[in-house]
Length: 148
Image 1 (cartoon, rainbow, N blue to C red):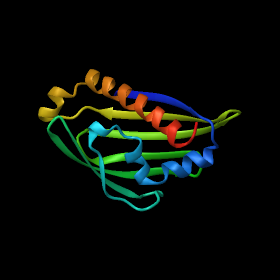
Image 2: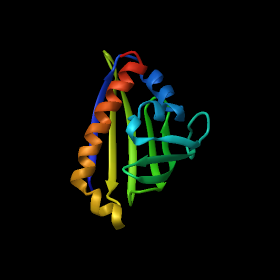
Image 3: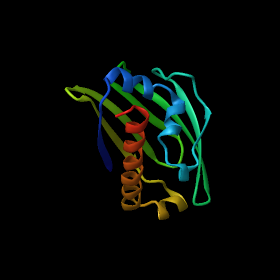
Image 4: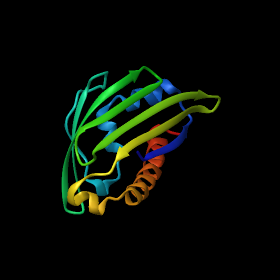
């Protein structure tokens, strides 16, 4: 199964990063505008078992995505798993580590490409390229919004 990993260094505490990640609206704030992502349903603050419903539209494809928080360790780890959506599998973890400069945020995405017609377009190579662009954008937005 393909895995994508990225690291972001932030000049604030793990607690500050964790609180930012716990607010579903912030997911939209760090998502590139061309993904047309909107939050359909979510709690004000994430917790273990929390459910998020997102809507995205790109390249003429509209996608409903349902994710569940499957791991939640305050100031250290949040894992969300796609339960409905375009991918056969999507598990996204945010692991936070305290460093002298602030926080190292390690993100890991385990995924399986979509099936059907989407799978013809979104090959593993195409997804890898998309993830690289997405994470570059997210890194800048995290630093901007968390003043890093």
